[in-house]
Image (cartoon, rainbow, N blue to C red; front, side, top):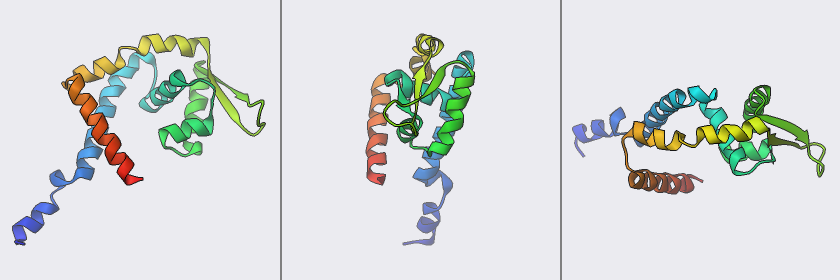
Length: 146
């Protein structure tokens, strides 16, 4: 192996980790603009997506879906509660568990968010087919890391 080839291996633009990291940061910036009208940050939006999919999850279940620690998710839920989008209730099955439910305002926000995925696709300039293929590839990559 030549010295040039070895140096090429350590160029930042040749690193998969940097491509994923920088792309994630760029997409998060695009989301910031798209979500401004909803009054949500990107992590808050992810939390709402999870609750729109399945209401009444515990804080820990939300954390698990987001692949975060519960301690990181708790402040997200608290902010959404302060905005009037969710409410927490003690579980009737386990008093230690806090379940999170959408309020009427939280449910109504879903309708306002329906165009976000399409607007993101337009901002990225990729087709639905390309987006689906990327999603499949990323799921495969993530599964391989577990």
